Image 1 (tube, rainbow, N blue to C red):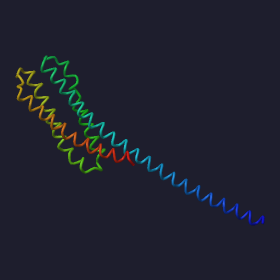
Image 2 (cartoon, one colour; image 1 turned 60 degrees about the vertical axis):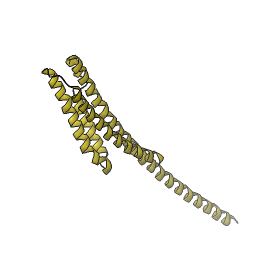
Image 3 (cartoon, rainbow, N blue to C red; image 1 turned 90 degrees about the horizontal axis):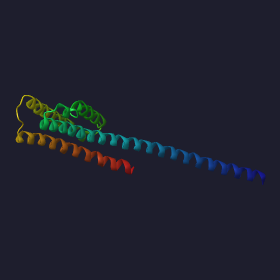
Image 4 (cartoon, helix red, strand yellow; image 1 turned 90 degrees about the vertical axis):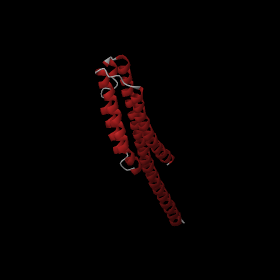
Length: 171
C-alpha cells in the first residue's frame, strides 16, 4: 500500500512537472513572439514618423521661402536653412528601414527626385528674389505641383505602412 502511494505520488509529480515544463515553454515562445511583434510595430512607427517628418520639414522650407518672397527679409529663411539635409536624412533612414519591403523601395527613387526638384525650385525662387526677378504665380503653381506630388507619394507609402501596422498590431 505504501509502495503504491509512493508510485502515485511520483506519477502525479512527474505529470505535474511535464505540464509545468510544457506551460513554461509555451509561455516562453509566446513572449518571444510578442516581443518580435512589438519590435515590428515600433519599426513601422519609425517609418511613419520619418515620412511625416519629410513632409513637415519641406513645409517648413516652403514657409521660409514664402516669408522671404513676401518681405525680402532673410530672417524668414531660417526654417529653410538646413531643412534639405534633415529631409534627405529622414528619406534615407525610411528607405533603410523599409529595405525588406519591395513595394516601398520602388517609391523611394521617385520621392528623392521630387524632393530634389522641390529644393531646386525653392533655391531658384530665393535667388531670383535676391537679384530682383519677380516670381510669377504660374511658377509658384509649378512648385505647388511638385509638393502635391511629394504628398501623393508619401500618402501611398504611409498607407502601406498603416496596413502593415494593423496586421502587426493584430498579431
